[in-house]
Structure formats: structure tokens, C-alpha cells
Length: 347
Image (tube, rainbow, N blue to C red; front, side, top):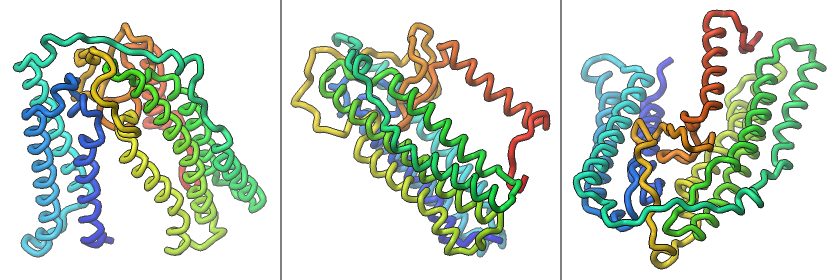
């Protein structure tokens, strides 16, 4: 069954909006994943690159929309929306890479860090008095997993893939809630006190949303379980109600990301001028793939906040990160060859 055109256009617009909004949410000193001095935030090269990137995103989205709308009428052929969206994502990613290269070139040619004093700031209170998760917020997710299990057992069901997913979500979210506060904090050497306070507030918001989102996901899986077990009918109203917790969670993350910005830099007004005479150390040499991949063998941190996107990534210079990636790869290979049987719907 072919999806309606309005739905396809909505997916295209949403994808383009995500790529278009990402640079706006990034820290001002990290345009397109490139570290620049605070005094260069308003540089014409940065503004020009932003404009070109936005025009490219809009143009690509319009072309994708025209392909979806006009192809059936002009060529009697309906393009697959997954192919259109994949192409859109690839082109938008390439535009981001080109923007990254433009900033790098302008920074190098203009020698933007000439005459600056670089430093790295730390906040020891994040270690002595760390941000602690509010574990009570994961109680609904755990309770929903237990409820789903009990319902399945009482109904004599033997398909527990969704139940497995519920407990897996609880375990993974709990691990993330423990690991994220231990990640390397994002403290600006130019404004150490203000950025430390913002980052602490940011962590509180992320951890709370993470734990609540686990409950939303498990609420949806409860409804899905009842549908798989045919204990409730698979109707549109029930499906809408079932997926509404995920919609609420997504909306909450969207609002928080817009309000907080990358690493919480938008949570409170910046102070007048810099608190110190220093600029954040230029650490571009440790970041690859347009600010997406971090590799620093001298950094003891396992998790670091990504330059692009509001979440964390592994430090590939840390030995433990390769243990994690190897374990994931082994599971994927074993599952692919059928050696390891993963739970599936109806099994």
C-alpha cells in the first residue's frame, strides 16, 4: 500500500528541518563541528557558510518533494519514499561536510587563533558533588515491564519479544544514566563558572528525560504486546493511543533541545563578556568526520559530548570503547549468521 503524498511530504519536511536546525542548536564556538575563538563567532565566513548550508537544505528538500509529487503524474512512476529519504539524508550530510570544510579553511587561512591564550577549564564539583539521576523516574518503566510479563503469563502466552525489549530498555537506560554524569563535562575556558552551571542544569534535564522516556517506550510496548497476543484488537484508535507516549517523549526532547541547546549553552543568558582572558583550547585534531568521531589516547574520558548533535559519543582513543564496539560487532555477526537467535515478533 502506497503512503499518501502528504505523509511523504511531511517526512521530507521533517528530515530537512532536523538537518536545518542542528547548526542553530550548536554551541556558537563550534559551527559545523569546528572549534573557533569566541571573537570569531560573527565572522563573515561563518555567516556565509550558514547561509549556503540553509539554502542547500531547502533546495534539496524542495527537489525531493517535487520528485514525490510530479513523478507519478509526469513519469507514471512513484519513487519509494525510503529511497527518497535516504538520498535526502546523504545529500544533507554532504552539505554539512562541505560547510565544515569551509569553516576549517577560513580558520586556517585567517589564522584565527593567532594571539589568543588557550586553556582547558575543569569543574571539580562535578566529581565531588556529581549530578545524580532521580531513580524514582525509572519506576514506571520497570513497573510496566513487570505488568506486561504478568499479563502474558496469566494469558498463557509464549511470545515475549516485547517483554524482553522492555527489560532491555530499563537496563540500558539505567546504564546510560550512570555513565552520562561521568562523561567529560563541557566547560568553556572563557566562561568557566557560567558554563559549568549551565552544564549541570543540562545534565539534570537530560537524565530526567531519559528515565521518563523509558517509561514512555515501555507503555507503547505494553500496548504492542497486547496486540501481538490478540488480547486487544489492532485498530487505529488503539494503535494511536499506544504510540502516543512515544510522541509525547519526542515532543519533550524537541522542546528541551531547543531550550537548552548543545551541551546546555542556551539555558541561561551569557554574562557580559568573558569571565577570563582565555579561549577554549583548539582541539580539532582529535575530531574526525566533521566533528562526529573523537579519538584522543591522552584523554581518560570514555564518553565525550559530540560537537554535532545533542548527545554523547565514545572516545575511540580509550581501550574500553573498542571492547564495547567489538562486543556489539560480535553480537551482530553471530545474529547475522544465525548462531545467536535474537527474539523476534511472534517468537
